[in-house]
Image 1 (cartoon, helix red, strand yellow):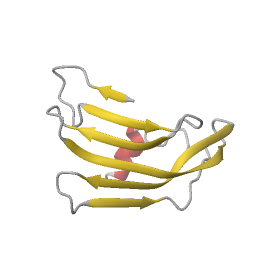
Image 2 (cartoon, rainbow, N blue to C red):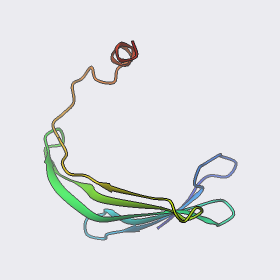
Image 3 (cartoon, one colour):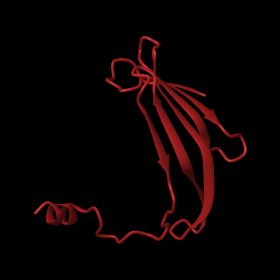
Length: 105
């Protein structure tokens, strides 16, 4: 799948190519391009895990492993491994303006 941003909008990645698993609809690979067509970053999502979500009352997928490769500075890469997730609903007042202000003091 190829996604292209609207013209005259400043985007970090105006063109994105996605490879998606037909069965689960999970992203397997993502390539991000500059407007010139130059490849800037490639991301891989080789392992997805399914877990039950309390808030959605159904199973959901999350990427267990993510790999990001900088295509401009070839030596730069990032590896993320998610060891566990908590799918319980968050408190209603979490991330409200008042909550954020209380954390900045």
